[in-house]
Image (cartoon, rainbow, N blue to C red; front, side, top):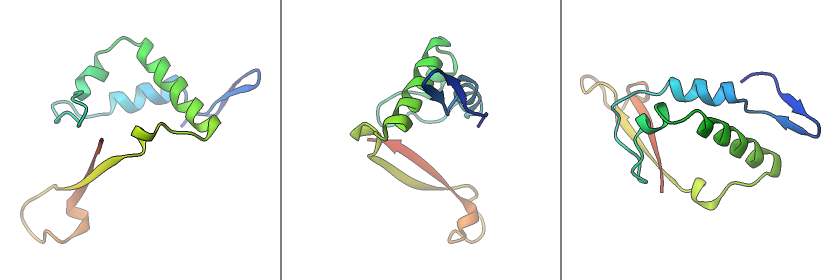
Length: 99
């Protein structure tokens, strides 16, 4: 995360650069979440959505509030490699879908 940027009384903790970088690092061709949005939708959307997402995340942090739907998710372990010891935590990755 970048250093916080202040605009008067408002401080950005999550910058536009942070949001853009996080989205650009996501894998393509993955399954869509429970709401039916594929990651490619975020990768190829208008840059203005990143601004809105940055504002939303910062407001959530500033107000100490998350919409209820953001707090309900399903986390599923996914096996990275099907060979070897499947009980080894290092061979699992997590997948989180918002409900």
